[in-house]
Length: 306
Image (cartoon, rainbow, N blue to C red; front, side, top):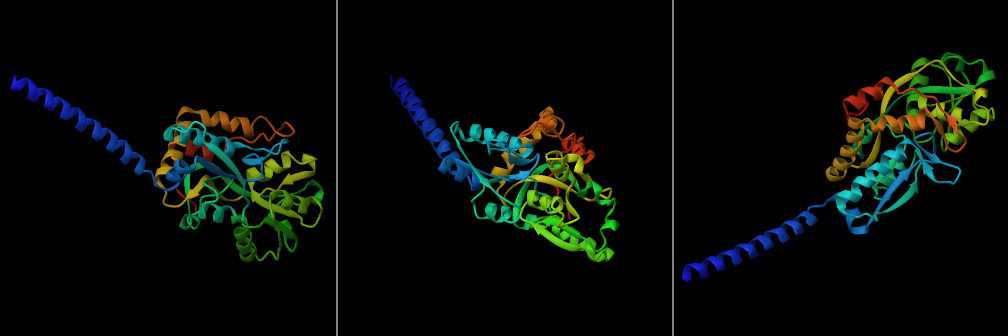
């Protein structure tokens, strides 16, 4: 009798202890959230920063909604965050950013994840964090077809434009000094304004990442009126940008992207934006996947460029 009573007491005690451990573990799990994941859980909101004219990475369609390759990747991350935090109705806020304010807005918490065309540089890693690479680019000039320009040497003494706040602005100053080209350097507030500076004749050429100028050309009123010059400069990885030292958020971002790469789904997303008709005018950029990106898909990496 006593033995049976003791067994019942032991079973009850074991049940209570087990329940306590389960509850404690659940509470501890919730308390373990840090950084952006904690912020998202507490607010029920995630804020995506997007560019306005970085075709086809992030730009406005005919309904003034941000769309593009980077936006699709970010939306996949949002889906993963919803599942991880069990918030199916997670609110997504959209915050326009440009080359000058994108890093400050990520750093100060106004933007949780930047979905644009941002290169991952060692210098930038002092301020912000980056996902595994999502693209690979080099730099090129775009000019009017009738300008007679073919290479950078043809630009000696002429006005060229770059978009303010970009790494391209630093690169062109270095090239200008090293080659003693005597370029007159101008700046546009965004890529659309920089291209307009060329189309209006105020500058002879606009330098930016090759895929971006190719996208701008494809969506111009008269694509045949614009041409990409022969020279290419450098090679850099694009990535999604987040706050620095935020391992939980980075882990879910990188996991989402590497799964897209392993499954091959990222190739379908690429084909959608670079090799098919896109909004708003149904233009096909016709941009083959860069060899650098093919390598990054096979072996994902968040290594930065110098």
